[in-house]
Length: 120
Image 1 (cartoon, rainbow, N blue to C red):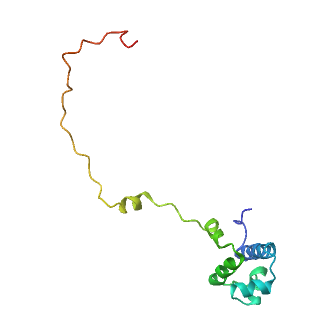
Image 2 (tube, rainbow, N blue to C red):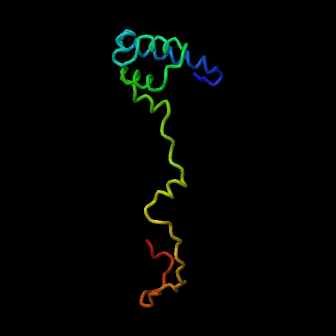
Image 3 (cartoon, rainbow, N blue to C red):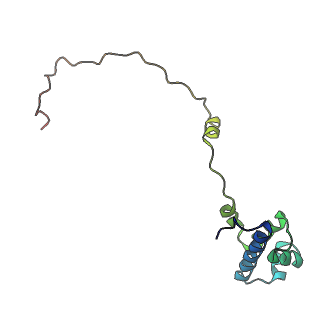
């Protein structure tokens, strides 16, 4: 489901329904969840109805009480590091490759010259 076309209030209602489903799946009453999260029953009600913003600290406490705090990784995963940041984090600074003088290849004068068919 994409929420892009929803208003902010509609997203809040959708999140409330998801919190309610998570609570019911955990077989908890509103009162039991409120006690476990350290919030009021009214806070749980407001969250599930999507009528009022509950506050991020309360949402974190409720997620923890439901045992689904780890799902925040799905909600907002850590972004991958940027290449420039990776270069900046290196312990040793980047160095240019040194130019080597052109050297002539060593020729083994004692070996007989190569001929077709020798590799079989």
